Image (cartoon, rainbow, N blue to C red):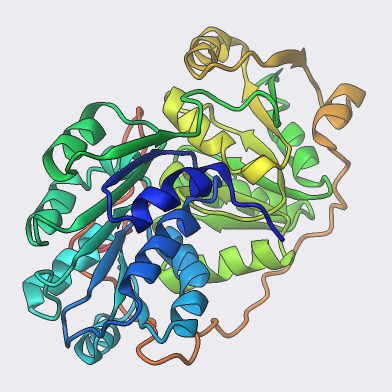
Length: 418
């Protein structure tokens, strides 16, 4: 029998007892089941009225919403409960139809749920149980005004479960305003895990950086490469594919259908490298990612830890590499110090044995990867399952370039939501 993760063992008894719970835990720590099992257990035996969900899970991104739904829908079904999602980039009317039939547990992003409330397709006065997942990421993405509006519409005496990697600043204010005498459980360090991750700073020259990236991309195993902007994601993905590396691009400028297909290809092994921006990759959980590469150094220590957290999940091991040019070394060192990381350093060039030892880099095939056009996946045939459609109103756009100049020549869609 599988053992419970620490966050589950710590929070479940209090959550099942009806207490408000404040949990500090990183992504990949098993907290989805920590709040999910508690909510489903407390909902068991009741019945939802039209347009009035009984429980709510708020998450920062649509990808995380889908992952939470994948984990909880089978459990809800076994209990005779309806669990559905309401996220941007999916058909609004199909979500409204599901809500009209009655949803026990609604998993939603703040922007799309606000749309449903404004349109009258969802009311929150019957929500007795609320879980906020990755509250610090919602704060970083600017969603807290919407989160507060949503919580103000739920019964003040309802149960609230809040999970966050950090419990300071905006998150602390949220806790003080909306949680009543919460039980606090902290099972994650505020800095990076040093037991399951190996961190490296690899100094490269400007001229050889692309060749080094391509050799890393040709390695065996799953790799996520982080860059700052949507334009750079597309450009790097094109270069990798032209060299024979099976790479996919993930950023907020893509439709939800495109994002779903890119993630499915990465999870199924059709592509080995995922090139992504910080915003697009928040909350993504893909098993067995053995290497994270900061192609562009993270903007701050929190972004560094978020990116690093895509590997070494739930006790697995992984490697985190930051590519730095000479002029970036001092800034990156200050950032890793704040993150609680002491990375090993090396200067590397294409073809180096040290580069291969650290990352598994290999010479790419040089045979360009041809784009395969496949029919998009359906979200499943379940009653009221979300479909594809135009993105909704509300919700924040992905920043063009965090900490840098606005992008040029990269038209942003009129609606790009989490």
